[in-house]
Amino acid sequence: MRAQQQEQLAKLSNEFQTLQRELSNLIESRQKLEAQSNENEAVAKEFQKLSLNEKIYKLVGTALLLQEQNEAKQNVEKRLELIRGDMKRTDQLIQAAESKMETKKNEIVRIQTLTAAQAQAGEV
Image (cartoon, rainbow, N blue to C red; front, side, top):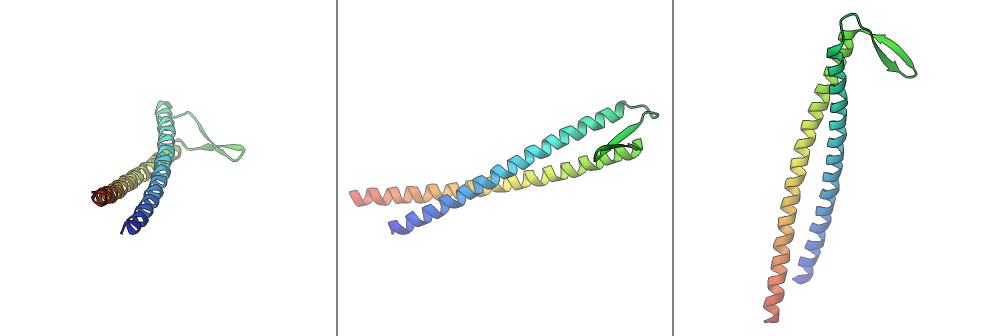
């Protein structure tokens, strides 16, 4: 019985570690999205300061190309929408991973408690 519990405990521990790595990757992705969002919001704020006759250039490869102001603003807004959507989806994945980790942790604690109780009962 104890060997089976030890195997189950090892399996659950491995699954918990896998979930920890997944959560770490998700948090890293969320941080990158946050940085992208901040950059694009800064660009959007700069666009608001421009007058209608000011020019906007877009870096394409090594060349700066003239871009219509409306087009540039729309591109940044669209990018922000996409980033916000990705952030929302990533937040949901983070919550799901945290929930799974909590469940695994509870299973591990339950088995450890059961094993300790059985060991103590065997000593009595």
